[in-house]
Image (cartoon, rainbow, N blue to C red; front, side, top):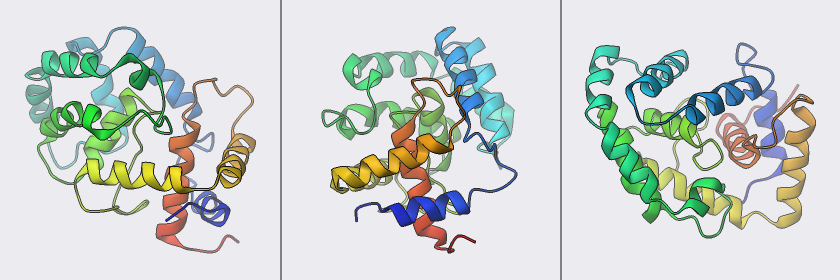
Length: 209
């Protein structure tokens, strides 16, 4: 189902007031600093885990549970991430060459850290690592697409973006750009944020006031 301007407007209207009103602009700058300092080592995980906690992604597991399982998988995450072609890692979800076959092994290892089937933790941690490549999904705000596996949700979200007419995609991006602060970085994840907001608007379907 293609995304619509009405959906992103409803998503913006339903953006919770206690969430950052810069649409996580400052947060993405912080993530960029964390990831560029060196990924997939214990220091990196220690910082990323705190950010996951701030998004309540760890619940109901303990930090000790996540620490143990993450540290056991750091080398595997490194190898699987670097096995993804550079053009895919540097691109976004809208890149026609990106496909879940290349991303799936890495995402599955991320999922194993919390060891649950629901896609929320996996989607958030993947998004923190590559915000332009991975879209956030959760049951309450965006709803789930195509089942509980994150790969199914990612494929549905990506397909719906591609199926959206070019002029509508440009309108969605323009609406999003208009809501961002002037200091938003060039690599702000515009497309995945548009998708997230459209899904929120579709799932909550509350007319804007």
